[in-house]
Length: 147
Image (cartoon, rainbow, N blue to C red; front, top):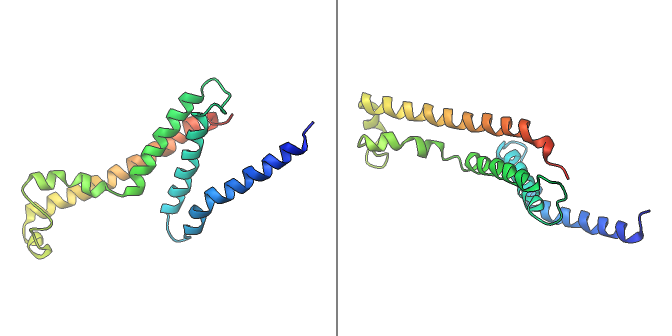
């Protein structure tokens, strides 16, 4: 039988949820897909914290926390949008810099423009791989994340 204290705890937990989620929801914009990632990230951070706490009761709580942490790490990469910066390493190693070469000159150097395009395609591929990995990871593990 549920006591009055159970219902009082539920009210406080719900109020806490409102406080914790308020900044995320407040900043949400319908036109920006990044907010979906922010919402997932926030939820996963809260879940990871729960599964690492003594409140988690199931046998594989720490394993689930690690799997959730993997999802958070991928989301962090996706939110940062640093794919082009990472993929431009080959461009920089070839002696090109975006600061030193005006875009007009870059367009005249066929080798540079081809290398820049190659790096751009690699950035797109890296982002696509992260999306694929994240949602495959969720498909494989998310049904385990309950207590």
